[in-house]
Amino acid sequence: MHFMAGPAGSRSLGLLGLHSNPQALCMVLLLLLVMKSLVFGKFAVINREAPPPLELPKYLRCYRCLFETKELGCLLGSDTCLAPRGGSCITLHIKNSSSTDIMVSDCRRKEQMSDCSYTRTSPVFGFWMYSRCCFLDFCNDPQSRAIYNP
Image (cartoon, rainbow, N blue to C red; front, side, top):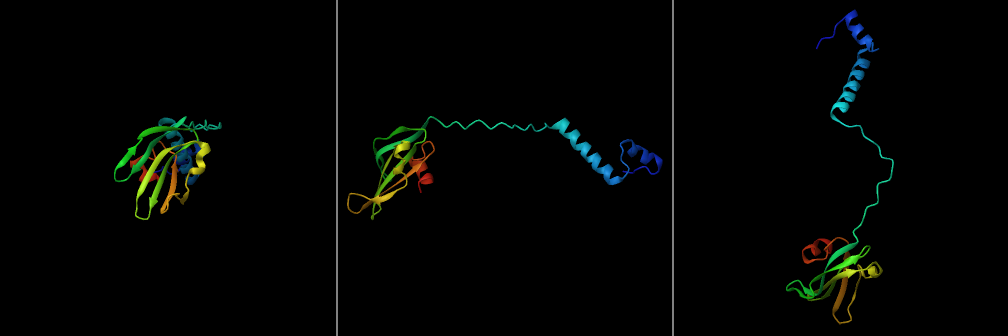
């Protein structure tokens, strides 16, 4: 691309009020960016209002089983329960030193959250109990338990 030298070149840039090459180049780039955004894009509209609050579901759906082992699956009471907003799903593990693992899965209300994440000895000698809560739909079912309750 050749620029015209002499009075013709300075006259064409002079019409825009630009007399030096760096200033002309910046003005042309700015003009191109504005034209591009007008043709292809939208102007960003800034919303100064606060976003609406995130609506939580009314109930959390949890897996319920009253007696389960890893080897045999749920032996008693396989079902679904609903924990009200603010509640959680829970899995209680009862173990002994020989790796016996008995599980109880259920729902917990907000008032029962003190049961979440504790470890204690069981009333039965040689066993101990620990519980884990989670807060997504069916996060305590057998397929998801390994992810949410390591």
